[in-house]
Amino acid sequence: MFEARHSMDAPTTTSADNGTSGGGGGGGWFTPHTPPEPPAGGEQGATEGRRLAALRPVNRSAAGGAGPAQRRIPPSAPPAPSAPSARPGSDTDRADVEPAADVEPAAPPTATAPTAVSAPAPDSAPAPDSVPAPVPPSAPARPASPDAVLIRRTMAEVAPVADKVTSYFYALLFVRHPDLRPLFPAAMDTQRDRLLKALLTAAEHIDNTEILVSYLQNLGRGHRKYGTRPEHYPAVGECLLGALSRFAEAAWDSETEAAWVRAYTKISQVMIDAAAVDELRAPAWWYAEVISHDLRTPDVAVVTVRPDQPYPFLAGQYASLETPWWPRVWRHYSFASAPRSDGLLSFHVKAVPAGWVSSALVHRARPGDILRLGPPAGSMTVDHTTDSGLLCLGGGTGIAPIKALVEDVAEHGQRRPVEVFYGARTGHDLYDIDTMLRLQQSHSWLAVRPIVDQQAHLQLPDAVREYGPWDEYDAYLSGPPGMIRNGVDALRDIGIPSERIRHDAVEDLVAARD
Image 1 (cartoon, rainbow, N blue to C red):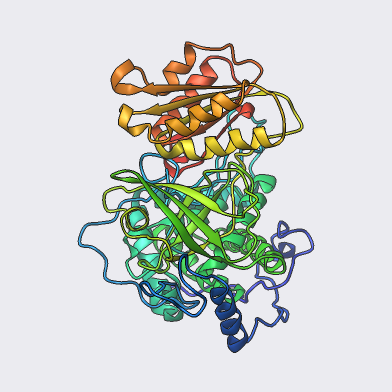
Image 2 (cartoon, rainbow, N blue to C red; image 1 turned 120 degrees about the horizontal axis):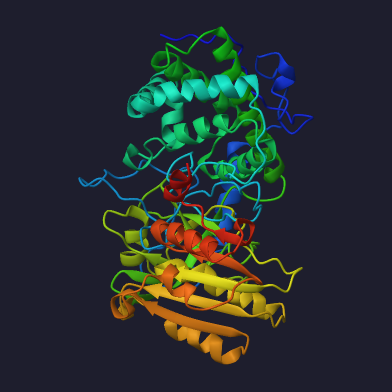
């Protein structure tokens, strides 16, 4: 059995250089200092109780009143029910694949387009589905550091046996540290290799400090909702090295191990620092009561919720949601409107086969149910310092964040041109076309063009080529991974530079770029 030859004490203090020094270059872990004391259990329970009490169910009195009992998720969720016999699919909130309503944490922006990436792919345990986007070919090449060379050599050796590495990693983690098992969903089918993939990819891009730090900070903040604490990181690091050393024997030696320790130390420190800062200014999650549930089609619903406390976000961002029916299983969904004065939040959710969260939100959720929201994330937002036009491509439920961007432009009183291409397989799938056409009637600078595949025999990205020119436009894409991938190619072909193309960074798209 692998035994770490380096100190595995938890990095718990804020690093002076934002976690990018690798712990002073000594090859070991940060020496732990006394971290701030977490709130006592009783105090935390009382706080959560007060927050839940502040949520008065729709059409019910404060004393309870008539109606079904309010369903809620307790601060410490009980074990999830048995998993369905069918392997669950990936829930997605912004696309027609379960990113349209159910998606995962976003990858960090690319070097040439710092705001070009925004959404997630299905997320379910203390780990992301998506991974840092590689630097595009146009970025200037930099020589790899010695650590990066060793790390990539390890990655090349374990790539053919990735499934075995994943299984061994989780076996080590749960056998050596059974106390960490409750942080993960009862059924690991939706988890699979997300945690390990995120760690490996972050390590592989260890030289891209600016990109990596931004990604890891977002990841560290997002992991608060899972109950992740600084003391958990050494256990994960120990098992990561244990799995790699077993399956990368040809490349593994003391220098390689030291490189991985330095890389993981850097990664974990940035995440811990970001979580500590975020803890001072925001809760780990928000409770949110469902106040309306509008079933637009048999498998698409618009779900509107009221958070228990102010929830700041920007149009174009997304949030992770957890339902009472699947504790510890989270999915990402784009906000379907710009911030509203009444504080309400709306999400467009498409139920997909074997989609746990999406199916629950579409077919089971009702007014009065209590969900949990993770913090907002994503950078597919409007730059209001410019007057460039917006070219927006929304496919399926990917129209939700596009609608939010249109509202955002309108609220800022700008008259910059906005062109929206709303794609769907059939006319029936244009479930929000009336809303978009009403916006068009209200704003002379907005043009909405529905594109139905079965009628026009033309894919959404190809339809964009027939209009234009788009030289003075920033492009935004949201929808299924295939649509985004084809859309990016089409936009580049007609001359829109990569740094002006912004899109949801679902895992499939990242993999395609790799």
